[in-house]
Length: 64
Image 1 (cartoon, rainbow, N blue to C red):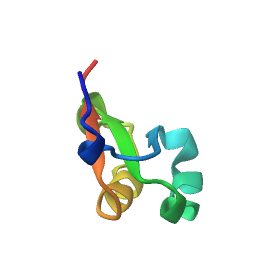
Image 2: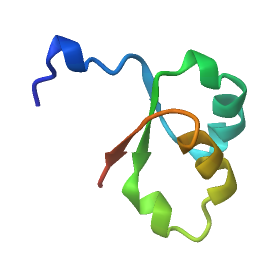
Image 3: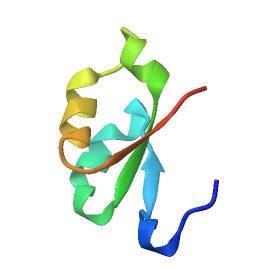
């Protein structure tokens, strides 16, 4: 996929529950979060942390 310069998203991270607290603590330093779509269906995911993150910064969905 080609990204046009006016569509540049910045610096992002792939969300993982193991680093969710660090993401929340440093949310102002992160431009976007990549989220694997399977996390929304995983009953073991911490959805409260994920919801807090995605309500604060843009997300890019990634299906596996």
